[in-house]
Length: 94
Image (cartoon, rainbow, N blue to C red; front, top):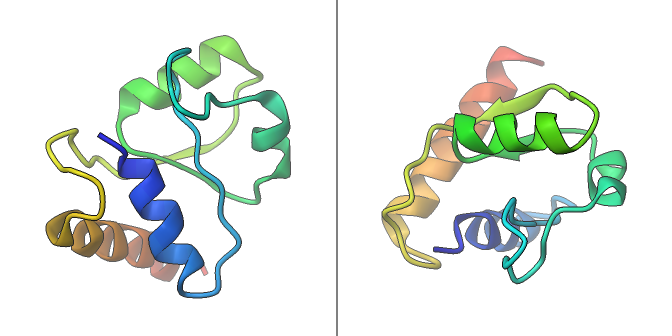
């Protein structure tokens, strides 16, 4: 339901260079190896996404946010969860 697009637009509006992609072939922007190589950090919404990417590409340290697919694009609750989870990760890993 466009969680990663919401995340990309949210953090881009805060001056962070972002990209988003889906793990399914039918995604608006499917993930490609170049996208993974471009990134300093790769956040995924669910463990399933990390598992799919590890099978399809070289294993990388994906950061799982544990955000379920129950939100619509730009949902205020989704944006709050994204900020809380990403900034909590950044605090722990500075």
